[in-house]
Length: 168
Image (cartoon, rainbow, N blue to C red; front, side, top):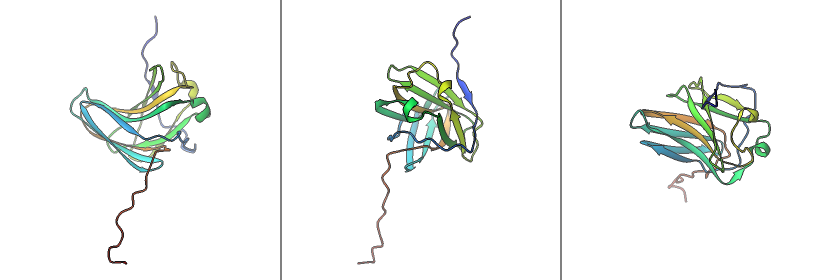
């Protein structure tokens, strides 16, 4: 019969597993017919806000590496991160290698409080795990959506507000 495009559904995993930090990255965004912004709150927590203008809109957060990373070395026991959303019940997840081959999954059963997701590297097919250049969270469709991501290591500069101006 042949090969079919298949998006792997991934429900929340074992909540006792520790989050597996990524190699340090500066999160960025991508969008088509949408506005997307990231707010990096700490070295391991961020929020991505999305506003799609129509049914065919898409966008999200992308972790892009100028030098490809080797997931078999960086995360040999699999990928664990935590997500939640006040507006989504599922979100797309993609891993792209340096030859632009893409593995796709749908992270399902999302709720408003953080749930951990586990991806075994053996689940990931069709890409070179030793030469990963992007990891992406994808939101689609019209309207405002928000995704909270606990993963990191994100580039983060601690904000320092102005101090008490009455002190010398």
